[in-house]
Amino acid sequence: MKILAIYNIKGGVGKTVTAVNLAHLAASQGFRTLVCDLDPQSATTFYFRVKPKAKVKSLIEGGKFLDRYIKETDYPGLDLLPADFSFRNLDIAFAETPKPNKRLRATLKGVRDDYDLVLLDCPPNLTKLTENVFHAADYLVHPTIPTTLSTRTLIRLVEFFRDEGLDERRILPFFSMVEKRKSLHRELMASLPREMPGFLQTPVPYLSEIERMGVYREPATAFKGQKYAARVYGALWEELCQRVGLTENT
Image 1 (cartoon, rainbow, N blue to C red):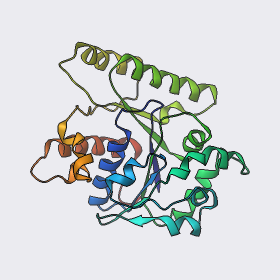
Image 2: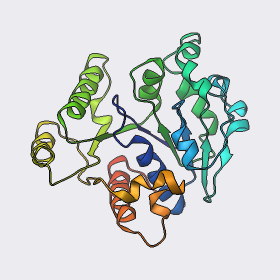
Image 3: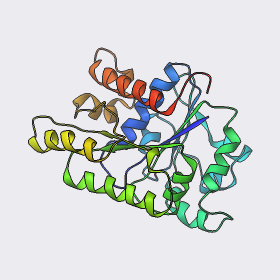
């Protein structure tokens, strides 16, 4: 089982739409896929039309307790651990457990025989929950808008990994919400991968198709008649599979 976290300290960079579309693509290719919505805003839960019922203790106790809260989605092979507003208290709950930085990893071990891929849709912060994500995930997929502030958050994340003795090679950034008509976007897309090796080569442009996900409440990769977003995320998914060694025998 591979665990991929879709993470950025900054909000509004495309984390949730990335998690939703990659999860749909994975399931459509036969991977048994679980999405864990860790954000109390529960946007992933909204997209998949699932009523949030999970509670904080589902992520603290794990095992069979976690199974109670996992829900099927409308897509075969794709399950969801929905978020609840109580997830705003996850940091407190994790801090009160033994080995508080590794509780999430222990929880997810309970489903490792049930899934090939777990995707973590993470809230935009750096907290005890985030440190749990860093220890649980095999890789962090980092949507990065080619702007100064978004670039700064990536640099800070790499610095944090170095300071904590974590392997920064597990951070896989890619450019998100790209508008190539903007000179700053073009400049940063040319310079940043040279300064910070590890960037995925597939950029995701700013697309109205992706914005419509909130209207239709489904992955853009499932839209009928509009295929550009599906091709973009398909290319990102294929590249990601190669980088993390994800195969059907995982």
